[in-house]
Image (spheres, rainbow, N blue to C red):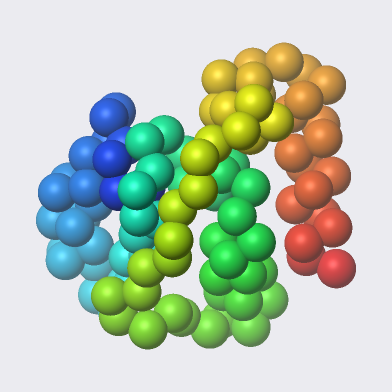
Length: 98
């Protein structure tokens, strides 16, 4: 599971509780980030965790965190309501998977 530390719509305590109920799960927290949608933060670190899991089945260490960064205009989650931007996200995901 990927979680921003200060995600208003899906608060961290709820993510911790959910992770605790999922056998063998891992919760990775992006610190000092006040956004919704950890995957779309543009972090290379989160992309690495994501790709490692999907490609290798590798889980991060328990309690893994990564340093947050200010969310730039380029990675705001509300931009993905635009079809062209959504297609760009899909292409970025495909590139990560290569």
